Amino acid sequence: VIEDHCGDLNAKLQSQKTQAFFSLARFSDAQYQSIENYMKSSEFENKHALLQKAKEEVDLMRERKVGNN
Image (cartoon, rainbow, N blue to C red; front, side):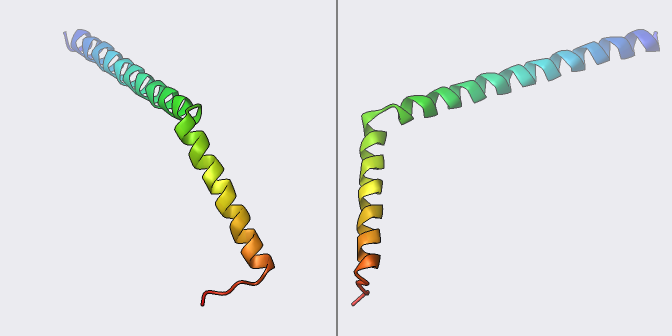
């Protein structure tokens, strides 16, 4: 009787663990897809271009030794 109960309990725990991993995989995939879509968006491209321009301006300021006056 105890062995049957333990076997049922182990099967239930294994099923719950599998369900948890499946839920985590679905969540992770949704997050990955969301990031992929954002990185392909024009919003991301515009922000990336602005960041590159700002970095170039900082480099120019450093070359010309512009201080914080």
